[in-house]
Image (cartoon, rainbow, N blue to C red):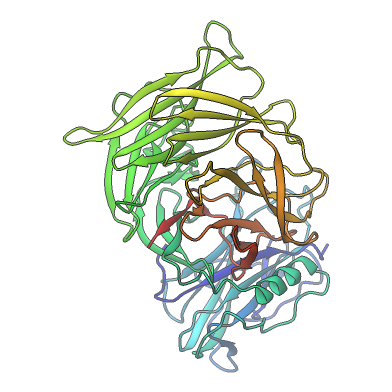
Length: 538
């Protein structure tokens, strides 16, 4: 990801208001354009960088730097390839430069009929630079045999503006049918994330760029603007990359499991990845990254690893982590033991794994791991497990272990309520017993755009208590993957979470002040290409 030295904020949202080839609608593409029917010749242009169309130097379309704006395009003909889906992307670069900055990409979707026309809209914060002639480029890579990449370009002028920008409105009106995006923007403007924006925290994670499938980027994400800033890159892919379909699906390095642990005392992020092999192998290689600069501190095999897949890692104290895993009972298939491991850094050796607890009894029903959270004061590890036979309702248990004593404490059934959740975060505001908190949707699973609330789970009784509403119904979709590793700021009592705007691929970072019972919202962004999203000190 060769990034320009500009700050970019992207929201990519998929409109469902229209009924490929590719045409760039706004800013308007070079040359003629006709999108009245599928298969238009004006959307059929090949050859990097701009489909053979020369730059248009007069009447450049003006963009205000630092302001939110639309980019619209149409997939004029769908060339979806089953088993090897393609994607589209939007990029920007100075004219006559091939150093394009990837703003976003969206995966192709299967719509059966190739003559399907689909409109897409990207809402971005334009780079706040002076660029007398820049190029916005749209591409469609279908991966279909016999099809090459489709290109379109638009010529623009960016005028540098003076800030601040966190309360600016869109430079173009919203589609009147696209109400969820408008509602999310209104929330962000009414409750902007300014109170905590200067706190000593960043979101960080590993970003994946479809055009560099064997490479990851360690990035910062600002809590108020959602701006993604790359810090470093690594030769590790995500899952099984497109370029590695050879050799029985083998590849050198790849990240498959979303696992991360934060060591705030030494500014380190620890994650596990695959060092070669296939996706059926268990990840056993460890990568440690300095969170302050993104530099790679250490890569090492997990010495002494017993092969039990690790579901969760939690930081305990300097050079010490605890892991949770699930191991099938070979003598009774379909039943499982729960495993605790200790990972310790040993000078001269690296990170060493040791199994410290194995449940004597097996479990065959509550085997869906959801989340783990560590109370480093008491040494208690809280593990949320779901019933595999009730995927659409809350039927869960919390298993409590004591890391210091290397023992199991208790199992607490979660009481039935109107809220479902798949993550828990320990918060201990004082010496008293800690509570568990979650950002959860309200109502039945059939409600696709529910209200979201902060809830508190009693780790002794398992009762679920709603504390206050975070957002009204009709804005954010029912998505359970927005939890952030180490997502609770214990000092200020603020829980961070990512919500998805319904019917879009737009994201919003919410900060929930547990003590003050208030919520603030970041600007619209897109974080769906970032794995292991974690809250870490600056």
